[in-house]
Length: 116
Image 1 (spheres, rainbow, N blue to C red):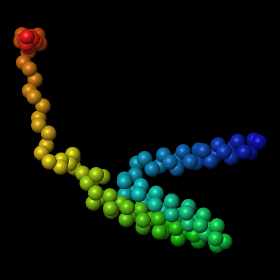
Image 2 (tube, rainbow, N blue to C red; image 1 turned 135 degrees about the horizontal axis):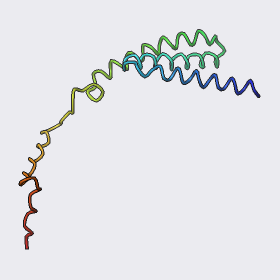
Image 3 (cartoon, rainbow, N blue to C red; image 1 turned 180 degrees about the vertical axis):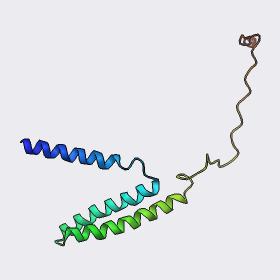
C-alpha cells in the first residue's frame, strides 16, 4: 500500500515536471517535440502488440514523429490563422468609431431632445 502511494506520487511529480517544461518553448519546438513523443509512444505500442521489440518501434516512431511535427509546423507557418501580423479583413475594414461628444464645463452634454 505504501509503495503504491509513493509510486503514484513519483509518477505525478514527474508528469508535472515534464508538462511544465514545455511552457517556454517556441511553437516549432512544441510541434517537433509533440510529434516525436506521439510517434515514439505509438511506435512502441504497435511494435509490442505485433510481437516485435518495443524499443526499436519507439525509435522508428519517434523519428517519424519528429519529421511529422516539423511538417506540421511548416504548414502552420504558411497559414495566416496561426502566423498573421494582425486581423485579416475579407472586404472593407470596419468604420472608425464616432468621435466622443464634447463636455460642457466639466459636465456631460445634455441629452438630445425627446422627439414627440
